[in-house]
Image 1: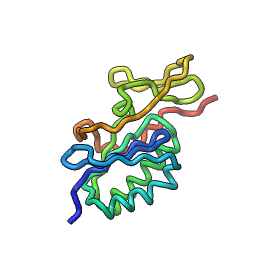
Image 2: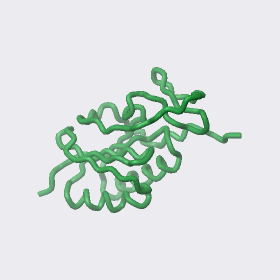
Image 3: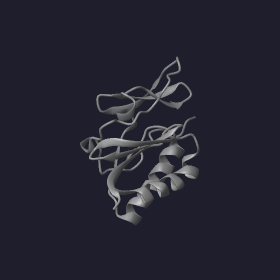
Image 4: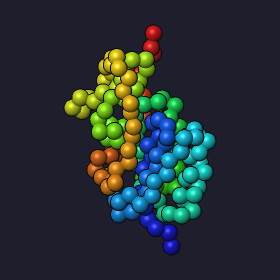
Length: 153
C-alpha cells in the first residue's frame, strides 16, 4: 500500500522544487534545473508510482509567466484526471516576503496583503524554499495563476 502524501510544487524559477509531505511533515525534496514542461511529467510519474497523493499545492505567482502557466496547466490537469484537490498560495509564502523579479528593474513586492510592482535599482537575489511543515490553511482553492503584469511598453 502506498503512503498517503501531499505534494507541493514551486516552479517560479530554476531550480523547480517539489516537496512530499506525510502528515504535513516534509519527507522528500526533489529539485531540478530542467524546464518544467520537460521534467514535470517524469517527476510526477515517479511520485505516483511511489506515493498516493491526496492533495496538490503550488505557488501560483507572481513570477515567470511561462513557469506559472506550465505549473498550473500541469497540476490542474492532474487534479481533474486523478480527482485530487488542488490548492495555491502566492510565492511570497516561499521566500520570506522578499521582492520577486518582474521585468527590468521592476520587482513584485507584497505590502500587507497587496501585491504590486516597485522599481529596485540593486538586483535582489531571490530563492524559494519549501517549508518543513505544510500549513494547508495558508492555501486557497482559488488556484488561478497570478500573472500580474500587463503589456510593457
